[in-house]
Image 1 (spheres, rainbow, N blue to C red):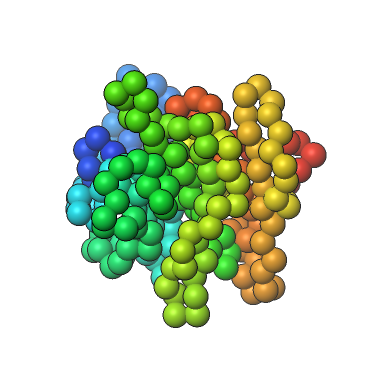
Image 2: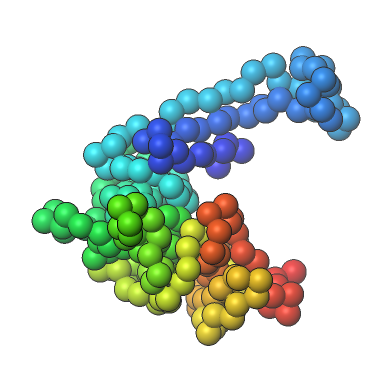
Length: 231
């Protein structure tokens, strides 16, 4: 989106947006205000701003992905919410939220750490299954991947579980392929999802596969096996 970068901060309760041009150079001593090796101008400053700072609706933001119409979905792992914002950072609605009477964990809708969207507009999120153990709050033993289908009016239906029993599912993305029985390799759990889309919608979102779950807290995107990789 215009070359911008969006960064969620659960600790800071906000989402920051960074806009180009970005400082470039082969190393920290390369200086600014000149040209880089490609001939592109180097920038002197970083253009950063708070995109969303709305604890009531964004909660503890941990994931963000593009929605239809230039909007954004932002997930909140602790409060169990996924909210939609427009391109100006204005709150539009909540797509996923727990029952207001719920007070304990895990929440009935789970704890969305990361969020992704397929070409039909279906929303997927990695549920960390937060639990209290030994007085500490952390991921539980039954992490999940959940899906939210949108009805004809664009409203979210109740989340459905499409994978469970995952350890620390802190990432979700969409890749080509079929939903498979997860296999573990070097403590990874892999899953895939194929979406059948009408020809006009076969864009980059449509040519992806759902992949999620790694045990360790600093995982990002888990790529499929080479024999399933998209060229």
